[in-house]
Length: 76
Image (cartoon, rainbow, N blue to C red):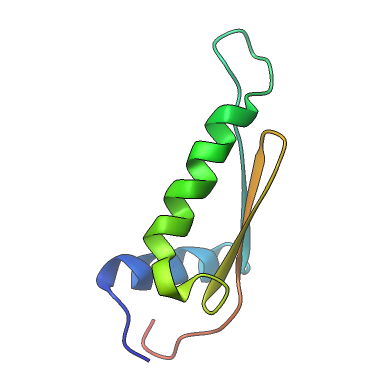
């Protein structure tokens, strides 16, 4: 499987995190910010492109985005 250097870095990062990472978004007042979380999720989905749900999944719930590695990539 051939992937871009950007996706290779994401795979390496997720491998270093144990296969999953979670991001939480808050506004300037410290309140949960689901709009910012949605933007983060959409950016990650766009970055993954055709590899979404093949290499990694991106899920958003309220102000939390979870990225989960679905495969291990031998070149990392």
